[in-house]
Length: 180
Image (cartoon, rainbow, N blue to C red; front, side, top):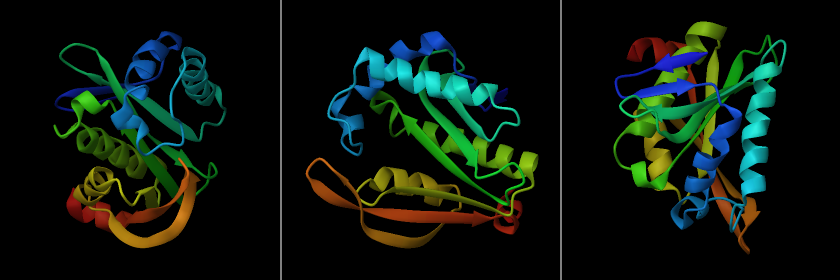
């Protein structure tokens, strides 16, 4: 499976993608909003292996794709959609991007392609997403997609010796259709 945008190719993960994943997941800017304090080669391999496992599911419910630059093929993150069940009416999107590529619109471009794929392929009624409330850039991506802030879950996540609030976003099919 492959999705193409103006500047990106979202493709299936390959086993050797782990080194590129490790490269950005070790960055302190990336780690700020994750429970990890560091990433090891083994952890990055396990992370990529999880996505390879999703590719083999029949029927498939999880589509997490490597985000690569069209110009160079360089892997700069991942983006995908997860369905709760094959006949689900709702899915959840998620993404992450290498910090060296933040602020260029890549996350929004990749996520928009995944939103379009999810609604058009699965006939979903609703898509949801969440992010750590302090991660203003991620919340901004979701808002640019047209997702609506639906709530704030106070002290939902605990990592790095503190509680973090989460923001919940959603988009209905009719809202997606109006934005197309």
